[in-house]
Length: 163
Image 1 (cartoon, rainbow, N blue to C red):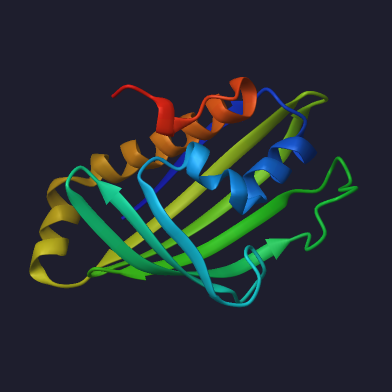
Image 2: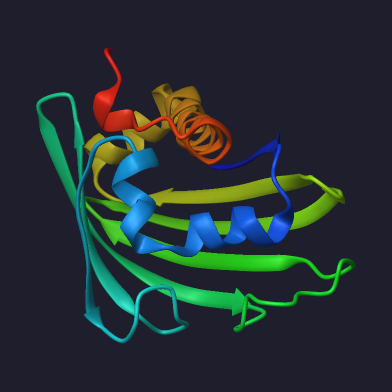
């Protein structure tokens, strides 16, 4: 299963990229995040593997995230015409997921964020979930992006939200 979700963020690209790349901010916008801890390497750097635990309702999902691409490696002074790439693979619970994030300058104070996701499932239960509920995955990706947008533009913290 593959899909793409995109949105504009009312911040200059360099600021949006800095907020997205800073692990200290992740709990503020990544709804359900219980833990994100590097197992080796440095957070956000290519090759780094991290243990990720997310809570969805009463269920916890644990996976290993591997950073597969980050360009440019130095996020300061990025030329306007450049595209910032953050790619990662997430494996766990009968699921493999590749996410390719692209951030481009849409205007002097606006960033276009495009997120491409690809999922593969193993095991009967996860294959059924992928087959019967593909919209759930897209909806969750969009929610994460909306939560980041609200955090970046307005300082909203998902931990303080009343669901």
